Length: 437
Image 1 (cartoon, rainbow, N blue to C red):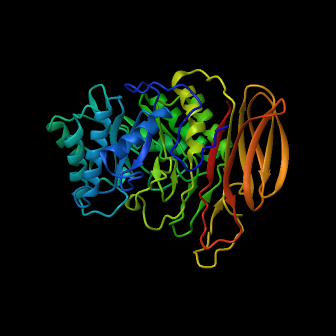
Image 2 (image 1 turned 180 degrees about the vertical axis):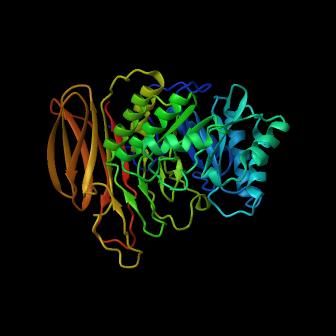
Image 3 (image 1 turned 45 degrees about the vertical axis):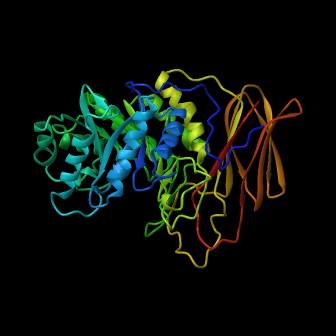
């Protein structure tokens, strides 16, 4: 019996996925350099890289919203590159320049040039055909790309392979349809080598539809398509504090199966450690005080999202559905959606089918029985062979899950308790998993 909740992720489901030089089907994770998820020492970053590689992730896209004006960015980037090199496991890195902030004209462009010139020839820099991969967030705000970034870098000996995320403009949308993507690509066709869809805020169905649109348009154009996977989304620091329901393992499977069907070149998980919006990073038990922003009090484990994704990552990368091992995953919020926190800002925008339920995903090699105890109420659910999703109404109190076969418990786990009295809203789902013997 194995219980995985707040401890660093162990990732036991599958044999290690090969993580040497990225292949055509590569998987990356968007890494917020502003949040040192488990500390900012080289050894801390080695730990995170190992965790990512154990899930089949080939590299990090290093999101930097500043550079020398905020010295922790170059300091941490240096440590991440050093960690990847010292591990010697072929883990790849590239920058995702974040243009969403406010910078004087020309300043951020100079920062991007320095990022590429500093690390463009590093052994762990991700390259395509010898060219340095560079991505962006909100990169359409980055001035004259050819004149201010690409041409100076090429003159300095750095030929850039540009796969940016640009918001469609003038009509900005987070969830573009295929017609919008087609028009959007035509605008940038002579600049880009591929395009990235940064799909964070949306239901699983909406995200899958926009991913499919990007994959189809870029494939027709003969350019690289980098789609996204978003486990969940809770904009707790935003004015409307919007939440999008992705239904636990149901949304994980829906998005990854869409990726497998549409066959983009690369996938970027959005995100590894954006503690303000969405993350799959295992929450370290020893969280250094400086590693997360002071307003983040939630320590919800998202290990279930990462571990379940591991199954589909291998499927995407190998082209073959992996064999099943007995395993159980759970996902749920830790308070009812209508709970009231008198001292906190209200949550104004709930998107999707938001219910007070436990989302459970079972992988079983033979028929079994799932017993769910939620706040003292026990329910029993038959499980067939294969992958099965269940929704069970939750109750305040302890949450326990156990799977039986032939009258014997083969795996079990206990999740975070659900409470109805809160002093702050926390729509980050908690998650966990258990594996059979």
